[in-house]
Length: 365
Image (cartoon, rainbow, N blue to C red):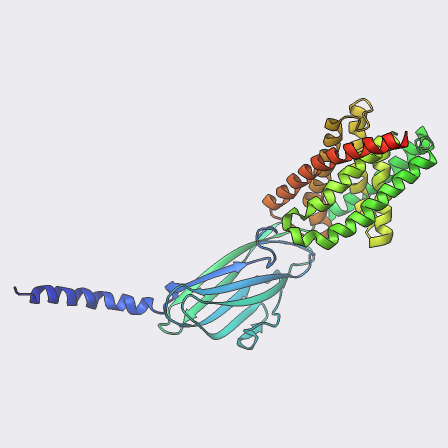
């Protein structure tokens, strides 16, 4: 059998495919570029969002060699002029040079299936008139064949919510003024006996000192479920206070004292956060009135009070106070997960508080 025609055809196919094989072994096609900003816990914080007037945020540029051969890569990273750029100390510090908002990375060898990482820090502007979309432009060149790949990564810079900040402070002060007026006008404080006030003070101290310390100490161990360490006991304490004191405004007074305790012990900013704490209590007190002065006398009512307190507290934090006071945007899925856990914690805490309150009230009587 004459095999020469088959060998000739095979040689032609091999000759035609060889350039592609050579090119694939160390070409820009094997180089995969990703940009991660902010460089925090991935998924927890909203990706590709910066809030003007916020603090510095880290960014991570990864050059991944998806081929099997070692490649030598040089890169240029151009960051939008709207942000301030700095380069922290890192493994590639000696190979990174900065010219304004442009970085140049001198030849870096990246083995097959390995990657090289460039870390930078960017600071958003103090203020911008409206939400704007900006880009990171990354260009990488592979020395082996001179091929080049480009990657454009878009981010969104959000104006600082100054009006929300000022509105929050004003609303907090208005709530305090309204509360003071209601106390004087209707003599609410006179309704509370010395035992009532002592009971509220003790429960507020438990929430603001003991359980807050416990939460701050062990929160990281439980990851996203750490909020339950604070939500469950606080919801239980609210129910206990309602059941034992049995006066209008008990929940609001409890959270007001709790915040005053936190201000002394932990140095909280009472001007900004006071409205949040008062609203937690005001919602529960409104529900007590709505349920015809049911001071957690049934398990269902106790669980509803704990659930609503958890929902309003965590919704206000993740969607109002976090971007306003901390200039941080959390990922929507993470925010709603925490709100959902707060609701679950409120239900559990309400049920526990109901059992504890009944026993405590029985002992007192």
